[in-house]
Amino acid sequence: VINLLDTPGHRDFSEDTYRVLAAADAAVMVLDAAKGIEPQTLKLFEVCKSRNMPLISFINKWDRPGRDPLDLIDEIEQQIGVVPTPVTWPVGIAGDFRGVIDRQSGDFVRFTRTARGATEAPEEIVEAGRAEVEEAEAWSTAMEETGILDAIGADHDTELFLAGETTPLLFGSALTNFGVRLLLDTVVDLVPPPAPRPDAKGEPRPIDSPFSGFVFKVQANMDPAHRDRIAFFRVCSGVFERGMTVTHDGTGKPFGTKYAHTVHGQDRETIDEAFPGDIVGLVNATDFRIGDTIWQDQSVTYDGIPSFAPEHFSVARVRDTGRFKQFRKGISQLDEEGVVQVLRDPDIGDQAPVLAAVGPMQFEVAVHRLENEFGAPVELNPTSYKVCRRTDEASAPTLRAMQGVDVLVRSDGTHLALFESPYWLDRLAADQPELVLEKLIAEG
Image (cartoon, rainbow, N blue to C red; front, side):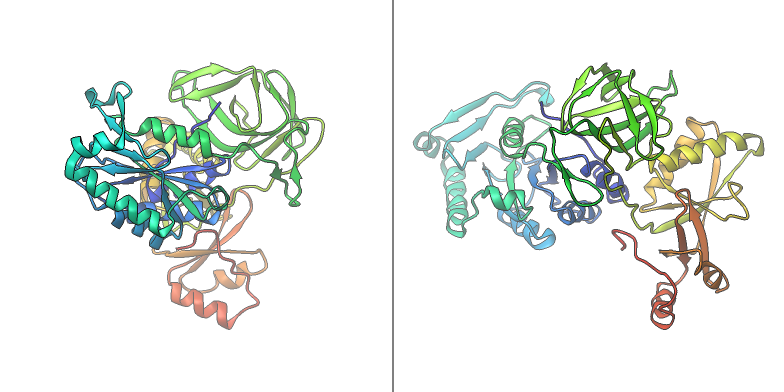
């Protein structure tokens, strides 16, 4: 069984991608043949690289005009620091896609177009001699390019792939289903099986140990008819059986798992049994938070998932004070899901919290959901804060007394110092080293 987890492809949602990577064994990075590595997706590549996550790359939309394939693989290596090792190579320039050369077998895989990719694209395996005659110049160009790849040693190396140093590369067109089968075959062949997960002390927990799981995503109102809340976890060790009672490590409380599902879009199926690497959704696990551990029989605590450094800050106020209860419930839920970080002034509470986000599109999602799911239309007012750092309660009074600085508290109790000027922050860190000003992950 292969579990595929889809994530947003925009840098504004890179924090969500980071959480999903905590539950994955490898990642497939999809690039546009015409655009290559876009600025808004570069951060996602950097996230994968920072975790030494094995990467498989797929250059999509080769049936449309695009860039030179050799230029694209150079860009991948230069910008994200992993070496592409093409598994397939296109025959025909972008926009005139004939098929691909399977570099392992040397065969030409010719594709036949289907109506908007509604079915699997028929493939024809063509021997090299016949392909040379039928594809003429396109074949000759592709053979010259693969000759360059052979000369520079751009061949798959399992050890380097698993270390996150190289990335197997494929070409295709998802819309027409060209190359998708080869991509899925590569996932099956190359992605490593589930491995023992290190606990908070750095000691790997064997996968045949008693059951344990790691919560990496929480989502409310996936089914508007039921208004429920689902906590998704990865099975890290042992066997999960629906109905078993597990211990929520954060609270020490037992939790019954009667309502366990697998989820695909809006479709749900009850799951009775799951094994290491499988993803399970628990309905109405209201105490579960992102980064929590659950276990049975033998206790374990896995490291949580750190929050990204927010770069955008806006004050949220409910437009209709009669809807304050719904507003308060809504921002609490969005905070738990990680849609935005909710920062509060202890003296004000939820009257006018500051919403903090990696990118402005997170605000759009928050505003839409508050109005449509919780019935609490809000107005957002941007602040002048540009950067924040983690601080502590002892440093807070000194920082609050400074102009252009405020200290707010996150729901987990973390104190964040917000600064209007990054230059003042740098000067302050140099002049008053006794103040706690710790960087957050993925700052900048």
